[in-house]
Amino acid sequence: MKKNILLCILIIGDKMIDDINDYINYIYIEKKLSNNTKEAYLNDLLSFDDYNNHKPAKRVSSDNITSFIDHLSDIGEKDKSIARKLVSIRTFFDYLMMRKEIDTNPCEKISSPKLKKSLPVTLNEEEVSMLLEFTPTCAREYRNKAMIELMYACGLRVSELVNLEINDINLSDNYVRIFGKGKKERIVPMADVTCDILKSYITVYRQSLMKGYLTDKVFISSYGKGITRQGFFKILKNIADERGIKKNFSPHTLRHSFATHLLEHGADLRSIGEMLGHENIKTTQIYTHLSNNKKRKDYDEFHPRNKRGL
Image 1 (tube, rainbow, N blue to C red):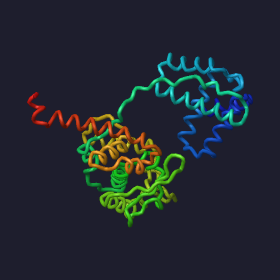
Image 2: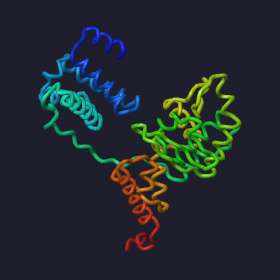
Image 3: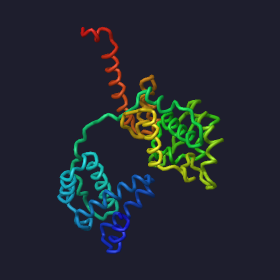
Image 4: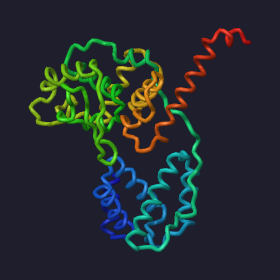
């Protein structure tokens, strides 16, 4: 439906849409952003353009942007979503300034909504064990266990997991090569147990899932092609339900759990950040808050003086 709407607007030849398409091509090709990021920017800018009745970019004012933000708030958009849309709009106008299409960015004096800081959801070590402590009996179960094991063992994003190719896995030296945001490469070590389940899946069971198709993707769906983000989420949810895990969590929770558990066991924060693919150590520091919360909880629960209320 969105593609049809976009096509209609393109036929009209509105200047804003031309600029948006040029910008999307720029961030996708020059900035090497992912398909998901590209689609998010595109959707944000299309909704902004639609709200302003396809007004040419040169005529967009700060009032138009403020009005759009107020509109999003009125219809119940969350602050985080509004902040993301504002980033999309701001960087779009930065691009137009770079091309000398406009002299100033109308977003210049507009502040993003203040976001409430919330700590990421994690699984404790017992819950991770509940997810993984099952004996696979068929190709799909070996694949499922290998995916969950690898995601938790290496702190992968779900997009990184589903895009892994056979040549990215090194079973002899126990590491995986990952291409993260901006196609940046990083190498993350794997535990022996992770390598063992991966080796069984890849050498014995993967071929039977391919059903005659040719693909370099490591993890194969029931249709013989590379598994999707949605497919992995469904698999993870079903296994969590089967194992009796009541916590509401997503695939990204495994990545948060990886970092938190490493930190709790004494790993260096900078090493964790490198394995996660963080460019800035400040991004990784959120896990120190999670670790400190656990320390406080453990103290309250186990310190004998505290238990006596002294």
